[in-house]
Amino acid sequence: MAKIFVARALPGDAIERLRAAGHEVTVHGGSMPPTREELTAGVADADGLLSLLTDRVDGELLDSAPQLRAVANLAVGCDNIDLAAAAERGVPVGVAAHVLTDATADLTMALLLAAARNISQGERDAREGRWKTWEPEGWLGLELRGAKLLIIGRGRIGQAVAERATPFGLQISFTGRDDDLHAALAEADIVTLHCPLNEQTRHLIDDAALAAMKPTALLINTTRGGVVDQTALIKALQAGTIAGAALDVTDPEPPPADDPIYDAPNCLIVPHIGSATATTRAAMGNCAADNLIAALAGEPMPTPAPAPPSA
Ligand code: GLV
Image 1 (cartoon, helix red, strand yellow):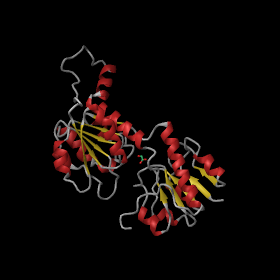
Image 2: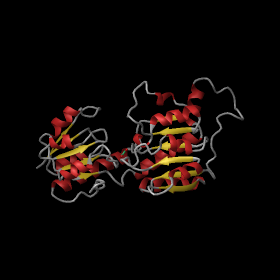
Image 3: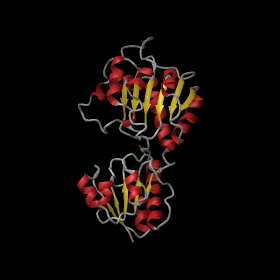
Image 4: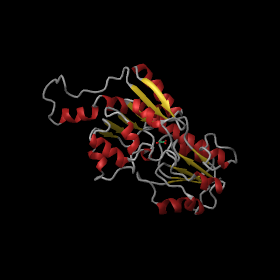
């Protein structure tokens, strides 16, 4: 029997499965993440940790958990975990790969359609008395057929977005690590981000990248807020350097109430809901449970995190 600390209550039957596998499971209660102190206390005698993307798992935390033998993150991204520190200490890390591809690609399309057709502004205008009549020139959006969609990142989610965007008649191109990003940005009508956040991609979309985009272009972000320099994005939206943005992720999350991102023009924001379907969240829990059960039995995790950059 191993002790497992789970950083939040989860949908689905992951916790029951961990218990059924004979483990002693402690679940952090409440709807907010554990504080650093609570997380440190939680892992102090734990063999396994089921972490969320809101939990920072670094060398200091790992050092406070001498028995820890496995970390399973309830996310496909793992920028909240210092993978090198975990590798140095021989602690395997797992991620919820594969299972959230469809949900995240669906949400990307929802944001893309909403941004292209002014859904957020239109909804506010309808409710707030600005819908006076059918306006031939009102709320004009972007026609998708023939528009150029640039997908940054060639992974599973980017491919799933391409699959969904194809029937809309979008002209799709991908760009990855070795391509000329600014040249690709200059051609695109819609840019959607599907690369992980790491040292190479932090602020990939900065002042210069935004300046390379068309003034009519839209930016969609469902990966991590840190891939975009948010200050640069706010400036670009204010100046009309680009036409709009739709963000599932921000930096930080959530932005504080007085964050200027809320007042940036044509900027739709939703609260990091890319994987938020009941089916996907339950599958993510199962994925994390599978990773913990395997690692605590001394077996390889079915869906390990990528190797740290230096490994
Ligand atoms: C969600 O953002 C995830 O990485 O799973």
